[in-house]
Picture 1 (cartoon, rainbow, N blue to C red):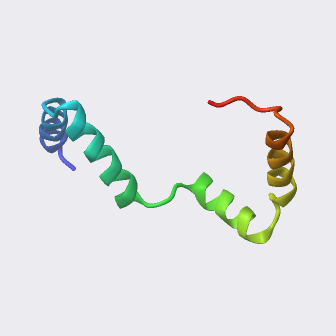
Picture 2: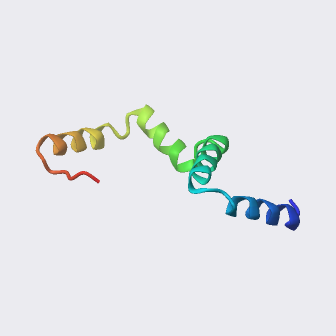
Picture 3: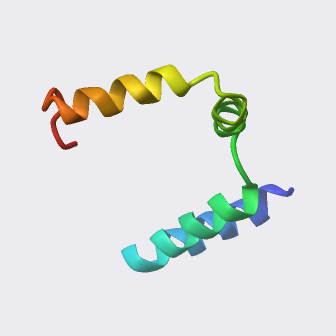
Length: 69
């Protein structure tokens, strides 16, 4: 991609409202697809490798050992 195209894109993004910028971010996330870490976590979840950690977290929540983020 040429430097001119990149500058044009940067200028267009800089002119977006906060709402438009958020809409662009969401679109880019969907367009780019899952990231490597997301795919790794999804594979571990599907294979059951995180079942113990999930159960521990759920147990901690039931016992009141967690705080809202």
